Length: 474
Ligand code: UDX
Ligand code: UDX
Image (tube, rainbow, N blue to C red; front, side):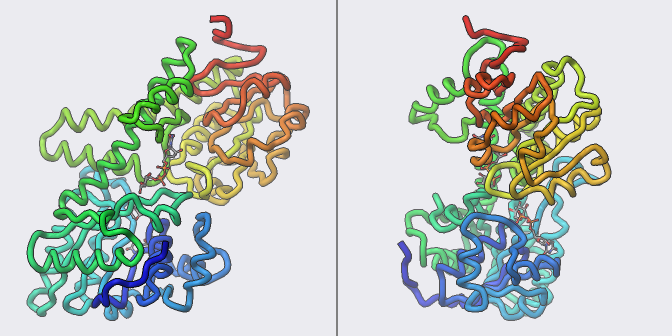
């Protein structure tokens, strides 16, 4: 239910710095739900801003085009004039990226804060007094304090800038729904009068479409830490179920039956219990590593080890999947054509950041396999990810073409449309024995085995004529 504005808030001009997967959709929904606000999104990447203004948005997200079409030019604007827009803003959301540091101190763990810092300095230079800065990028705990220090270094100019933490919990593929009907909106501030006032101003913005009870106000550090913890807990569930999937394969238990059985316990719940090739995406690994770094920097080595093992199991699951392929295919994939169905880190997105497919494809190429990769939305990103090592890769829009002449199919993303494929036709065109390694347990092994495939799912019995481990009678 759309709600009207409850309060005539002081905040009229909202700016977002960073037009990526987080900034773009969040601001589109904000503009749509707050017609009285002017929302502008800026980015250093001029090509991205051009795309946001054009017919083909730079990211694919179900339902997003419609919202952008109805708000763009009315109260949603895109621009590259960052200083000019900062000057006009009452509230500035910071949505720039914070990747894992690839160099120097903390490399491989710590978040790279250079973009956040550059953005803070630009805000200090150009913002008016009383501007509210909202940290939306996922950042290490106590980052708001660092931003605030930079912003307060302009105190001599009489600027009063308040920094809030307002982490984003949207998941790709369901971003629009997650933004329109969030489980909660978290707002952290300093517990001072001006901090609470700024927090209230942001809560007023959200209250235009989110129920008051769902808006959680905390101190800044709790807010920052809650985001890292939420992602760590979600990822931990996946690593937990994936670890049990390995045991299922050895014992003849079925991971889907186990997931269902444990998920019926209300205390455990059914979500995030799908075993697969491991989690991907721009957040889980980065945020856990950031948490690990944080714990180590406080000397909490046991806590750090605990969370690091969640990433360890994820790596293991990907390695195990490749190992399984090689073992089943008579210990060699050299010169064999393998069709990869799905490259995105999850369905309904073209995003391939940290996608398990990147690791799996690289490993198979090292083993001398020839790959034909297909994905409804992620082919361009796949090309970029494998650039320089893709002499033996073809990128195919058409799944039937990708599968032609292949020794094996790998399902790495659970696109729904793969369930509707004519597998009889695919089987005919493949080399025999024809293997299916279903890394997402998307397909029905019994149906495929009947056609003649040898099917290797995750955490379940394999089905077909070449079982390495067959426990069908046990
Ligand atoms: C990113 C982080 O990965 C995530 O942890 C955080 O919660 C939000 O920001 P995402 O939106 O998915 O998430 O990143 P991305 O799609 O890379 O978008 C960031 C945008 O910021 C890019 O378009 C980039 O060009 C822009 N940017 C980056 C700036 O405008 N200025 C900078 O200084 C740096
Ligand atoms: C995640 C969080 O869900 C979101 O709240 C946060 O803001 C950003 O990070 P996202 O990475 O977009 O969102 O997608 P998500 O649905 O969480 O999936 C992440 C990965 O976990 C995907 O690779 C997915 O395939 C995998 N996954 C998810 C599983 O392997 N099994 C599951 O049961 C669920």
